[in-house]
Amino acid sequence: MSKNKRRLLFFAFASRLIEARRRAGRDNTADLYRTTRNRVCRFTHGKELDLRELTPAWVARFAVSLRAEGLRPNSVRTYLSNLRAIYHQACREGLIPRPAISPFEGLLPRKERGGSRALDEKTLKEIAALRPEGTDRRGGLVLDLARFSLLAYGMPFADLARLTSDNIQADEIVYRRKKTGALIRVGITPAMRGLIGKYSAEGSRYLFPILPAGRNVGHEEYKALLRAYNRTLKEIGASLTTPVRLTSYTMRHSWATNAYRKHIPLSVIGQALGHTSEQTTRHYLAALDQSELNRANERVTGEIERLLASG
Image 1 (cartoon, rainbow, N blue to C red):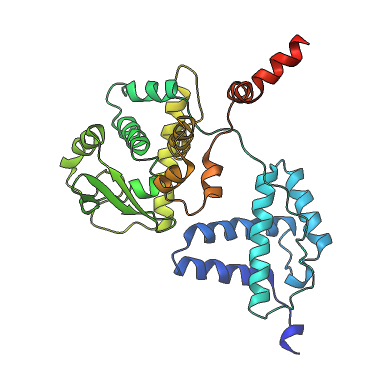
Image 2 (image 1 turned 90 degrees about the vertical axis):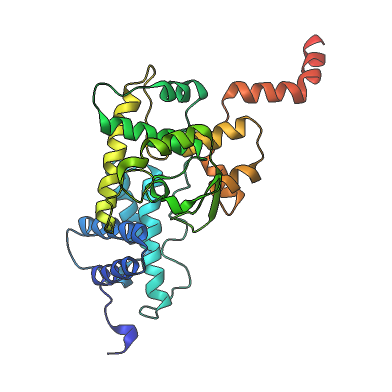
């Protein structure tokens, strides 16, 4: 039987890709492929799937099953995008013939803009003034990390956790983003220096006591630390005067959105965030509220409005 006639079993091929991504250090992609593989397994009730069976009709049924489970359009899009990536990798490797039209053509839902993850200045000031109750050392550390993240252009948790004294160069923190490798330089403010100094006696090479000293942390252990961080942030967010959904990315969106509302150019915001395109930066920005849009419209069309209204 020729190579193009052999069955290519989805679960075995996806598992091979997952392991390859792990070996390459692309753990987030490996995690996405794993959850997609598991979703497909649930859809097929564990029955083996030949990648040749991924016809437009099959993909459409899979998408319908995801929506029937109550998944939002963006989640459905994520699963289909990952499945498409696995399928196209098999095509690139010549394991299955590349069809004239992709079975995913036209089936990915349009990306839905989510609600704003950004906090307004009033809420940020309340977080800055919070004091952890009693001897809640964990809550105090998480608060400090969230505050430092905001002060450092919304530094992501992955980068915050890995900061060491080597990243301090004169009056700047200089580091490369874990996700993209982009070089970021952050001027150290007095408040940032105070937060660093608060944990400098912890006996670790890290600036903050997040990762254990003296050994490398595996991907699963790191994710457990991130989940614990998000759990505590959720509790802090729920305790505010006006409860908010607080996550490890909230400060990043808040910094970007508040910078934009203060008319800082997108190019500057993008450089601070380590983005390589303006489109990526725009995804971080909350939609302007209607009152801002109304004020903008007044500046553009106010005189015409008054002329028409008086007629």
